[in-house]
Image (tube, rainbow, N blue to C red):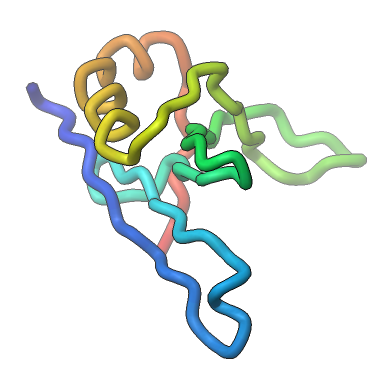
Length: 99
């Protein structure tokens, strides 16, 4: 596979860290193109950054697309993304965030 997805975990820090969940960057070609979040029910969801046209009302050049799939563990979520990289790239015009 030419395009390899990698993940980077961000753990909450500071005084109120016990109130927040970790989240993971989804990286493709070493650039962030989405996130994995854990909701309060313990399910993991995938948010991808997708390109969009800029407008005067909304000058941002991307939007977040939330996939319908929900997973019980982070391992299942990562496995889904790794196994479906090509399908995701065909379906979505991903936006890659600058560092």
